[in-house]
Length: 332
Image (cartoon, rainbow, N blue to C red; front, top):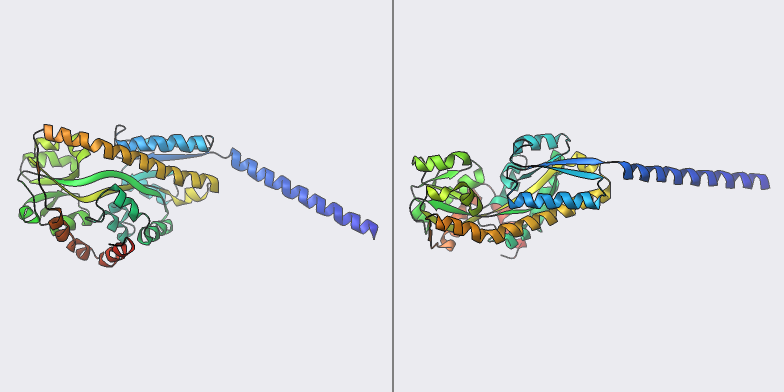
């Protein structure tokens, strides 16, 4: 009996030892494992969003002791947004700064985050991230192979730059305004009273010169950077879109990370977005000064009239139910 008892004790001791060794080996493997994430953007290295990504890279690498390395690619060096998203979808270790319009190609309802007057400023836009609508939609992307780390990279308010003064929706009647081709942009501009012409942004300057179009809608930083004020005469600060973009990566790649690293990436993406957005907000006055000094006249705008006109875009887009739900959650 005594011998049997001793045998049981020895077996239990051996099992405990093996479990401990196995756990130690597993932990050691996790510690030794290294990962590389390649992040792309269409923006230049001088852009505030890229500056935010530099902070993301620094903090992730520091907090993971270099086990997660982040490589940054500006100016579409990693590829067009659509191409990078398709790589991420099949598990490649890549990510991209992208917008609700592009992500709506996978989940149509996500496009509502780019809807007209859904937010009046950055702080309002951040509140959208707390709604069940955003959380539910962002979570659904995992089924398509994507992980949304955060969607708080703010690029500013989008305004109208035109050849004739626009202070109310009626002033847009008959004007040809450039659209990116996104349903949200096109239907919003049409609801506000404009005719739309789909053009790549790179062709907008020449199109204005040649009178193919009579205006564009764009944020001030892009207007200053492209010198669009040289071929337009008036700025109407309609603020019809608050341009939020996000860092989207491969969900398959993300799920292979230790939980600690997953938390670090999620947290540091949000921190980087906030950092970049603060720069955008602070520099907006500089951009506006450049635009005004370039000869643009700033027009007084009836914002409430534009808001009322733009509201019908949600019906045209099939977003009415989602819009009402967001308004209810935010107490509007």
